[in-house]
Amino acid sequence: MPADLARATDLVMRLMAIPGPSCREAAVAEFVVEQLADAGVNRSAIRFDRAHRRTGFDGNVGNLILKIKGNRRGPRRLLMAHMDTVPICVGSRPVRKNGRVASVDPKTGLGADDRAGAAVVLNTAIEMIQGERDHPPLTFLWTIQEEIGIQGVRHMNVSQLGRPRLSFNFDGGSPYKLTIGATGGYRMTIVVEGLASHAGGAPEQGVSAIAIAARAIADLDRHGWHGAIEKGRRRGTSNIGVIQGGAATNVVTDHVEIRAEARSHSPSFRQRIVREIEQAFLRAVGEVKNVFGVTGSVSISGQLDYESFRLSKKEPAVRAAREAVRAIGAEPTFFVCDGGLDANWMVVHGIPTVTLGCGQLFQHTCDEQLDVKAFHDACRIALQLATYSST
Image (cartoon, rainbow, N blue to C red; front, side):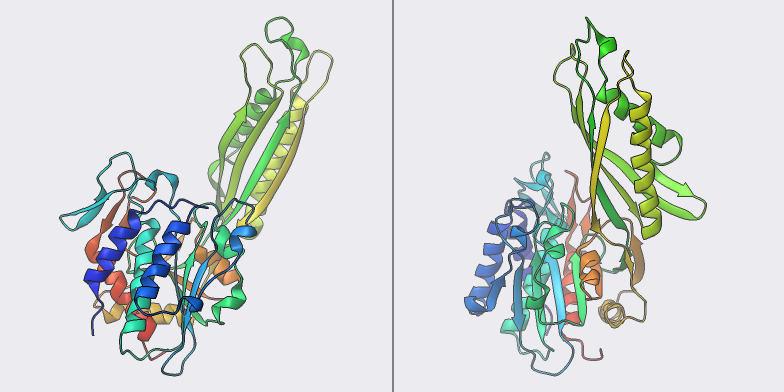
């Protein structure tokens, strides 16, 4: 029995039209709950954890979890996707044309990242609930706050998942691309304090926090520690993404806040990048003085957003994903990405997770599209993963 692709298409079109950026996923979750209930799931079997209370952000709903019993023996499998979108997708009005879906409004993104994944997982859950298919125990998971540092999975209640042994995350890109590894990311907040003075009457008495920040950033760029970083055989990236400070041109700015990040597949090299950023700002503080020799100060805090990982091609979840792609007549490719995924924290939680795309194109832009054929193939692959019996 093939997957119900007409229903899947209807689900994804409706999901992409629901506003739900990070921390505001409740309406999306309610749609998923309604569809599951209409398919015959008792609402008491649908659970929410309280991850949104632990992330540090003002979220309005937790991760959504559904477990169903198997009708044959085998290790529990988990299918998952995140519910949130980036802010530019709020207001999406999806329309299908010539095998692609895009937003009618050119000023909004489509939201296929990751409502397409949410639809794939939802459609598969409905297939399992309503169909007469043999399958092992299954867990379906719709996560929150992925787009702001993979917060939902990081803070989830893993005990509610039922101890899955194989896990499959449906996110952006090609359904035939198996992402088996990803980089790790560290996020930093840097606060530079200077000394205010009148910029016209007594600029020499001030200590410019902007000048300190500018020297530090220029230092990082000049020595190859900003942007793409290559030091021998070691690779990574860093970015100064946000700078905020100052209120008037006639005041020497005494306070600047900066947000930055460092990434690398190597945890030790990522730590080296973080140290270089810290040292650049500390040096810059000592270089900027007023006429009396007074300097500013800097305070730096940070946290690991997600750790890097790489799964072996012999891992059961990887083998199952490869076989599922081949089962629909496609050839899988393996990929290690330079961004973060829900899979990063799933692996930390002890659940090996392969990520597959759903046909999303140009994600995080107003030109975002969904390739309908690829989306349908993702639905077929998900059905294979939920029912395949050789693993």
